[in-house]
Length: 270
Image 1 (tube, rainbow, N blue to C red):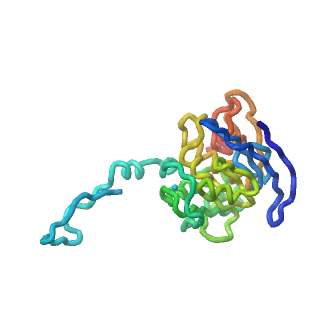
Image 2 (image 1 turned 90 degrees about the vertical axis):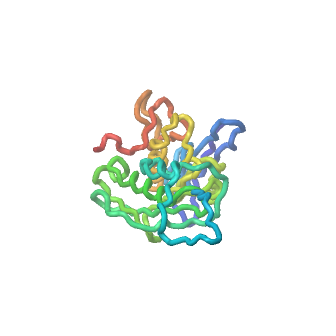
Image 3 (image 1 turned 30 degrees about the horizontal axis):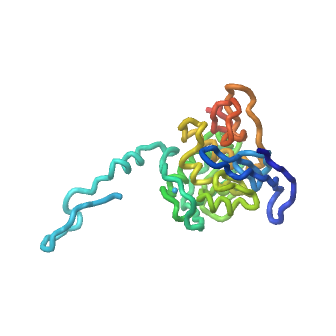
């Protein structure tokens, strides 16, 4: 299997590295990923690359008083979700499709860090399982960390909900990712960056990849930082050596090349 690369200009966008991704293999193997500006999340060298049930009933002669009686109790799964770390919330089932419409998650954060300001907005496709606010909170926590692209004060970041954000981080179902990343072929599996949009495949967000050995938190950190890195003009790099932390711009969704999983841009920052 191989990747075919070609350099071209696309009207209305910045420089685009066109990447042909092999069709997904049958069975359990992961298809190849690529990255570009429209750019797929892992693969070729890139440029700017989602019951409570209440079983009670009220008899015909009963009078129900608002607020009377005990408060409904949250289910065990709801309580566990509330107690989960921000980066591990809304772990939902995989999907193939959702409603096709993206909605910006409302709300703004404080300015995090110092230096020139980078603003980002968070969008979630309507109809995805999970809580939109969970995804927005996770993106905010990742990008606001000193180990992310702010580099401990070199750049400040802020989540906004306007149309003029510098970067837009979008969570979408696989078929919508395919559409938003076209003409690149995401094959319903990979994520991509297209211009200033970091487009996250919902199935990767909820399931990660097998070779992260169940470490979904690290994988989610990697996925956001990797795709946002492409919107900032970062291309792909390789594993520097056996047992070293994988650089965030390494194509870790494909394989680790002997490196250890890592999601942070500057893991040594405080």
